[in-house]
Image (cartoon, rainbow, N blue to C red; front, side, top):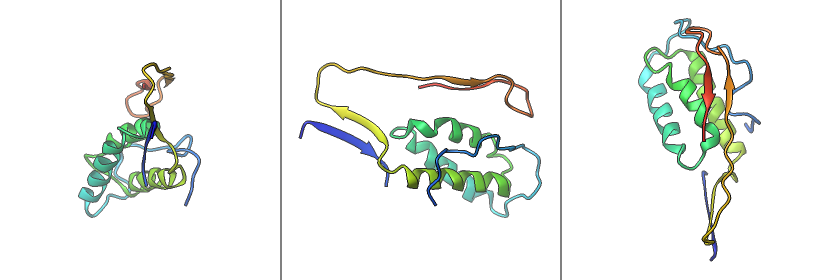
Length: 122
């Protein structure tokens, strides 16, 4: 075998819905916030093989202190995205040379709470 592919085992086309208005206000707090924290921790582990969800997981992890139902629904949306893109992953081959492509996207002053810029990096 001369190639290797790492990938992960409701289909949606983006990790998070566009213009998702998540804030840190406590509108409908979860009765057990540990469920949300554990889900975000597991999604964080997947970043090794699925860098396409890195922004989403980083964004959702900002709400670990007091997660609400809308935060949990957004995390479930990421799971649906992963289910629909199961064939994506990090590709490895046995060639001594490789070509790396990286993309960066930023959204200036995107955070509605802190008014800070949010960016992604690979």
